[in-house]
Image (cartoon, rainbow, N blue to C red; front, side, top):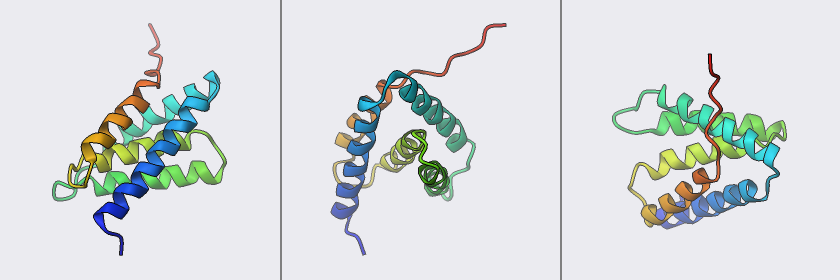
Length: 118
């Protein structure tokens, strides 16, 4: 069984890894990560909370992350970032505020999706 500190450390390592993927990506890959992140954000928001918990959203994003990871697609980073943000949003683990700052910086490196003009 993991302690709260173990979970925090693991999540922080994963967040930093995801941030590094974003930072080291070429512009095309970063755009693909951005698109995946914003799709994940919309997708997660469409899933109802369970007794106030975002766990169903986290699990769904992690499933999508795994699908992209198995296909060796860079979009996996966007799905992981969304899952991490949902977990941080619970605000019930050590250092969540610091992790939120890092996650927000990672999102800040992503471009919002292009909207078509009609």
